[in-house]
Length: 257
Image 1 (cartoon, rainbow, N blue to C red):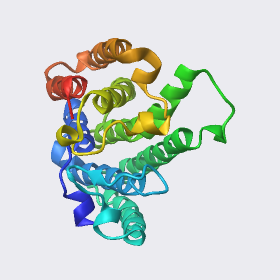
Image 2 (cartoon, rainbow, N blue to C red):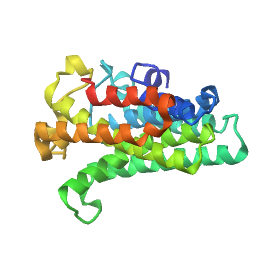
Image 3 (spheres, rainbow, N blue to C red):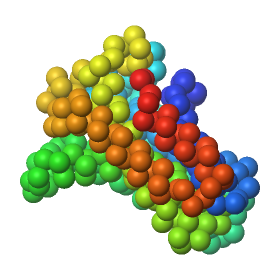
Image 4 (cartoon, one colour):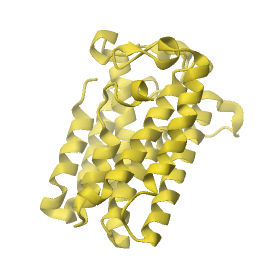
């Protein structure tokens, strides 16, 4: 479990919990259990995604993936343990009973959406066909976006957000979630494994839908720019309290690994 959780990474999702709590005027330290819980869910998802039955990856963050480091059985059990630990952690949040219940619901929703997105991506015949762009967005609004959305909403809930604030942060989360995946697809096309710390070019090899594959590299860059603008617009009403969220959106748009 330590190998899976503490082996590097951007810590994007817990950062979003913390800074969304601050953006709505809350005390960010209150959000720490919620922040830890979403990172545990993220770590569990990576362990299972890397398995031979899923993406079959042997490198993660510049190190052997967990099933290579240990075994497939240990990787499966580690993912199961991290999933359970996440829910045991979020209920330790020092907020009201009503908010704690909302946090659990948001975490469950984010986790379910993430799993649904993996199904849409890995088992494309599971549902009736839809237009290619709609299908691509549906995959990543769930696979990547659902946990990012949950992170932002959980931070807002910890901070006592009103409905309008929650809606604004949900829009922000949806835009940066798709933007994150579009940039990830560009990195997979343009960068080497030495730069990214994981195997690149694997989506094309597997015949999976990607933003560059559907829109081209320049078309994907245009989409990243559009989504970045919409993310910034969604949180402009928060003023100075959203400076960190603006910085996170810029980082996602510009990252190369």
